[in-house]
Image (cartoon, rainbow, N blue to C red; front, side):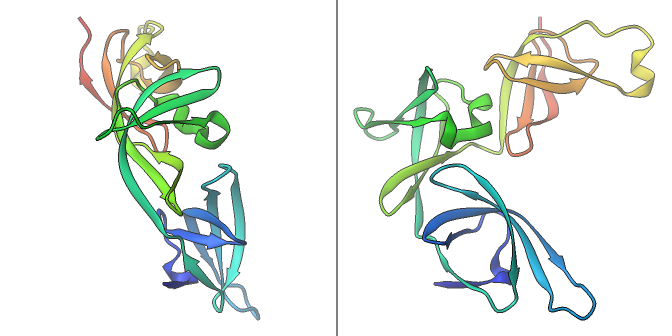
Length: 191
């Protein structure tokens, strides 16, 4: 199926210069005396590189033939991340952190997620949009800080550090939006 520039919306997969990409964001630009263009931020699904390109209204793209299958994240070792097919655990595969990019901060063992296949080959994974994590390190809130609604950095069970509201403490379980890397809510207060 072919796609026009107006079909390029976030999470749409398409082929550009022979490689599969996913649209991260688009912005329509209208400049005087010029034809409108669509500014597109996109990630290469094979090497993980993010590009920004401007496309004309007349540009046409091929939709990437992408499918998904459920997989389980097993473990990480020296920049390699191992997964298994959920229905057939003996079918294992690994992806490097160069491909996974920011997703590595949110990979927890035994998490079930989507593997993305292009031409029947697994090329990347897609995390659930919202995931829960235990806070393993959190600096104490300083009295008087809360009036400004400030933030502090905490460390999650995966080793990632993120900004959270001051009331979050060690051992709390918090929900993160994996697409933005931002805190969304506290799920459970630590003991």
